[in-house]
Length: 469
Image (tube, rainbow, N blue to C red):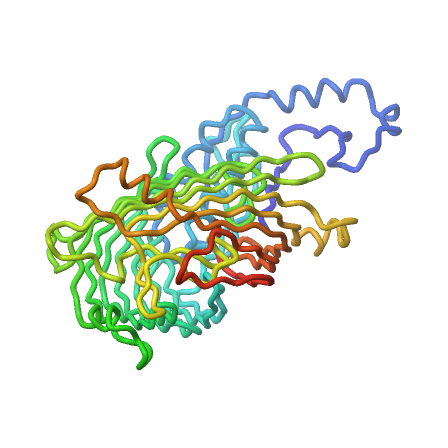
């Protein structure tokens, strides 16, 4: 599956590593075969026909954009390269089980001496597929049941239903995805969902019922997403011992917001990168399109990764954000930032830094967090080249702060407030990469800069998630 087959144009050379001929055998090759290879690689050819075999419900017009570049090839090497690129674009549509490519000399009455026919042999996905799997989130797990209708209208559309039952939340959602023909990165999605989550650090239970629409598109080296979301939120107490501040937040609210996200990601892996950088900036404006929540929220994430000697990697991360209420109404506990735990400032309990009331953490309107990490191979490299490569030794230094701001003060006062009472920690541990899905960490942490009300995890701390500081 996925092989590019090239049938003969002229007699092919009988040397080279692909044909299994060793360097010691070169003296057996006729001298005139050397120029034949040169001629074959640079010979002008014309792609006369491109066929797609195996189509059922897929419309041919959407595939025309994906294979058009094959006709621009000028020699056999270009034909093979552009055919491979076209195959990758066809698979990216998510509508084919597999795609094979066959390159042959042109046939028919209009065939040219240097003409080629390229055939893509495809097998479509079933009209309906189901799945059952488990997901690892930020220190939580869930069972996920899914039902998918790929290529529902024949132009790479996708309808998906998903039900998730987890340790801290239960959710279900229905989504429709539609890419633009010829530009898969430019796409539209609409989602209907219900999500119920439990947040024991705040003694809070939240149920969201909402609808959202998204439009994603690339600009130069950046990817952008514009989103509108309307959600009916129901907040309640998770325990009878919930603080009065949490009880005050209980009840129903409507949020209608517009958001924009810009991402530049050159990392080789989102889970445990060895090189590259990430820049993500998100803005959310609520209240101007309805609802009773009004705020402006800014959030950013920066990550730099540099490979060093002995297969080690130095990684630096910086997060930050600010929540500005609009009008006289204070911000909601559901919209604020939270900090602390094995996925952010290690050595502290999950989201247990910052403002709190009677042991319930209320979140903050401004935060920052930074991390410096050194990842190295395991000592003596056990399992090198196999399972052992999934493990890395981890040395880290984390710091951050979370607080509320007095917006009547100036920016200098805000920065001064964020620089006060910095929590920080250091330690070492082991990281296990679970493919490109998630990662597990087992660290020995030493928390420092602990403030009154913070909960710490001094010693061994376990973390599982998809986004780590």
